[in-house]
Every structure is written in structure tokens, then in C-alpha cells.
Amino acid sequence: MRCPFCATAEDKVIDSRTSKDGSEIRRRRECTECARRFTTYERIEEALPVVVKADERREPFDRNKIAKGLQRAIGKRPVPIQKIAELAEAVERELVETGVRELRTKDIGERILPKLRELDEVSYVRYASIYRDFRDIDEFVSELSDVIKARTR
Image 1 (tube, helix red, strand yellow):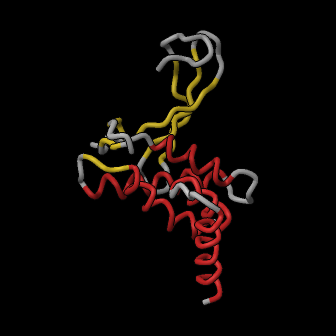
Image 2 (image 1 turned 90 degrees about the horizontal axis):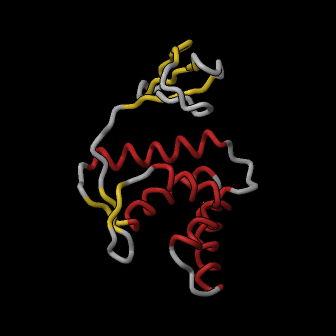
């Protein structure tokens, strides 16, 4: 593993821990050259689907893109960063379990929305407004009305 500070390839592992669900290993490392510490994560490489974009381009699935989109939607809301990571990981796990080779961005969004709605309703509406590409205020109000109705049930 290359040190992110000095790019030396030599380091030593000073601590290893398995995640709660056993899906990854967190390792604290110390560079033998500059003595700075950094963290790495190891996880099993799984066959992730290829994502088909709206313009038909294809690219490899990237959990970080989901996390970034969620961070934008959740911005300035009282939602812990860890919850974003957990949601992105849950979506990734679902996608792997389906076994499909290609997946449309629309399908990914449909898996994210219900989980985000449970996490934070305001973030859900923000994400839905971008994901569903609301054309006018009426579509926005309609989605908001659905959230309010579900809340009062």
C-alpha cells in the first residue's frame, strides 16, 4: 500500500478490525518512511453491475457516486455521515444480490428513495426533485403532498 503522504510503498499494519457486519476490514497503517498513519479498508471484490446512464452510456457501478448524491440531498440536515455510508452500502448490497449485469440509473434511484424517505423526509424530497427531474412547482408540490399524506396515516 502506498503512503498517501510520501508515496513510499513500505508500511506496517498497527491495528486491524472487522466491521460490524463482517463485510470489510479496517487497517491502521504506519509509513516506515515518514511515520505518518493512515487507514485502509479491505472488502471482497464482487461482480458489480454496469450502470446504464440516461444517454445510454455505460460505466462501472460506483458506491461513492451514490454517497455524493446523498450528501448533496442531506446537506445541512441532522443526518449523521455514517447513515449515508450505510444507505449507500445497503443499496450496493441489494444490487449485487440481484445478480444483474446491467442496471439503469432509474432503477438505482428507485432503490435509494424509500430508504432515504425513512432516514429524512426533507432529504428525500430534495433527492426526488433532482432524480425525478421535476419540471415545475406542481410536480414538486405533488411529491410533497404524498409525503405529508403518508406521514399522517
